Amino acid sequence: MRWTPRDWLERLPGPATDRWPEGERFVHAFARGAVSVELYAPVGHDPQTPHAEDELYFIVAGTGVLSIDGVAHPFAPGDMFFVPAHAPHRFERFSEGFAAWAVFWPATGAP
Image (cartoon, rainbow, N blue to C red; front, side, top):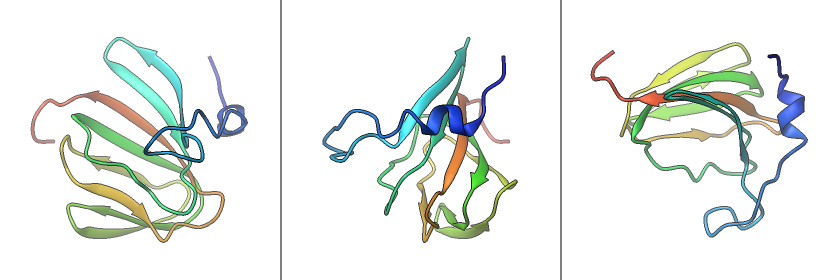
């Protein structure tokens, strides 16, 4: 199977929720076993909270800063980040058109 970010960006925004009053800014793209993949494309701000799963982000488009446990990491397309389960993190000062693949799997301890 093959997908491009454009395949999933066309599905955004998703349904409106309390956290996403203008529509969800992520779309579930793939799941198999314990692994799931989303395309994440917030607009304006990133309201996410820590996850119970380990996570990899692959930056698709845009620039900005990913804060992980209070440490700021500048990013650009092609960058990859690991975020351990329960770690506070959020994208900040990101450019228009920002998008990232997010890959989740059950937490397995320290990397």
